[in-house]
Length: 326
Ligand code: PEP
Ligand code: MG
Image 1 (spheres, rainbow, N blue to C red):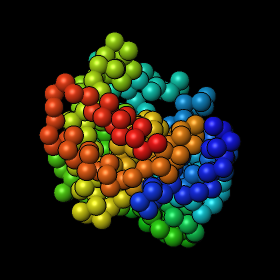
Image 2 (image 1 turned 180 degrees about the horizontal axis):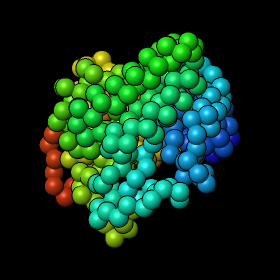
Image 3 (image 1 turned 30 degrees about the horizontal axis):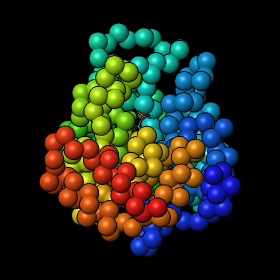
């Protein structure tokens, strides 16, 4: 198996009917960077910046953040890197920050909410990203956005930092792309307002599924109660892919779903052309995509979603399809 994966490492993930799916890497620390070469990834689709903050003993200064982001961009070279701003708060507490007691941390004061209410930290982070990206493309995305206004406010912070850099004669990025993670179901009903404003979307299916089923992703009593391969989730994911295409905006999926071959197959069938996955998943997902007849799968999925048969397992139907494909 490993030898087989190594052999396809530098091949693009193109299905049998000629559709390319970009396979990006999920990363967060320096130790993840060698995986770019090892896996032949197209880029880094999700760089979880909070990991640097979680392993530190004190709040990393702008200079330390800048240093990390520069190393990440240097390692990536021509490959695009999408930095996610801090996703802390809730249950991701920093050892050097005051603990805030909340009854529902997953739905509490976290991620972009904290970033907008205490913008000092978000500003320093955005500044570090923009400076690290001098002379190249910088891609920034915000976690846990629930409303269009939150995106507007976060984008204004990026613009303010760009003005600051320009005024101080720093070398500017060539291009800045700003996007949103789709993790809160309310965004599904704001896509026509949101999509014209953003440069891209990235679906955080770990949180999106948690909130759609109201099932705590970390609670083993309930975490496997519902199958992700079910009509409500597939409808939401299909809607996102369709709306993205309609508005001409890239929609990536960077949750754990993309790291499981059967689920990744489903995503390709629903129209996703960009996934971001863990390093170990790269080989298995790519070898599956190389064997796939995407047009036939898309037709099957539409049928499974639009004519649901309660009690019949979509997972089993997709397994049967995958087996018949070889
Ligand atoms: C997600 O929610 O799917 C995601 C990618 O973010 P995280 O797992 O870091 O919450
Ligand atoms: Mg998330």
